[in-house]
Length: 298
Image (tube, rainbow, N blue to C red; front, side):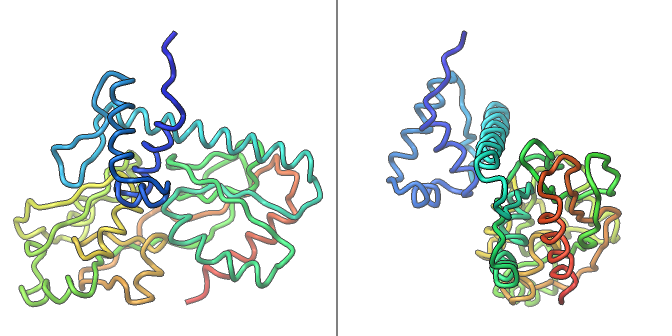
C-alpha cells in the first residue's frame, strides 16, 4: 500500500493552485515563500515525479500534478459535505443552506452578492462549497448546485438563473495600448483557460464563430482556472474571454473593459438546481428566489 503524503503538503499544493501563485499562497497560509517551495519539493519527492512544470511562465501543472490536484480537490469536497451533514444533524432547524459551485462562480458572482442577501434575510446563513468539477454535484448535505449547461438535469428542480454572454475584456491600461496599435490582438497576450468541459468556449471557438483572427499572434498565457485567468487580466497581463458569471461585475465596475470585439451568447446558461434530497427546501427556495432577482438587476 502506498503511504499517503502528509496533509500539510497537500494543503500547500492545493492552496498554490487555488491562489494562482506561490506568493499569494504564502500570504494565505501565513508562511514564507521558501516554506512553500520546500513543501512542493517534498511533495514531489514523496510521489516520485514532478508536479509543477517550471519551464513555463507562469508555472503550470504537469499531467501528474493535474491528476493529484483533482483528487485532492474532490476529497476536500467530500470531507466538507460530511462535515455539513454532521452539523445538520446537530442543528436541524437552523435556516442554513449549502450551495455547490465552481470556484470562479463563487469568487466573482456569488460571494459579492451574499452581503446583500444577508441584509434582506438576516436570519439566513449560506455555506459555499467550491468544486473543480464542471457540473457541481448535489451530494448529501448540498441543497443547491449552481451549474452551467442546458438545464437537462434530473437530480433536482432546475431554475434558470441567467443567460451567459462572452466578450473579450482586459484592463483599461492594456485596452489603451491595443487601441494605439489599431485594435490588433497581435499587440497583446491572449489569456487561455485549459478546461476539459467543451461547453466553455476557447479563443479558437470565439474567433471561429465571430470571423475574427488573432492577427497572427502566437503569444499567450495559459491557466488552469478562471480565477487565475481573471487575476492576470486585472493585472493588465493580457486579454481574456470575459464571461458574465466571471467578469461581469469587473466590467460593470470599470476594472475590466470590453475591447470592442463582438459579444456572443452561448447555447448554455447558468442554472440553480434545488436538490430533491434537501431537508431545507423552503429555505433553499428563498435563497434561489433572491438570487434570481439579483441576476435580473443591471
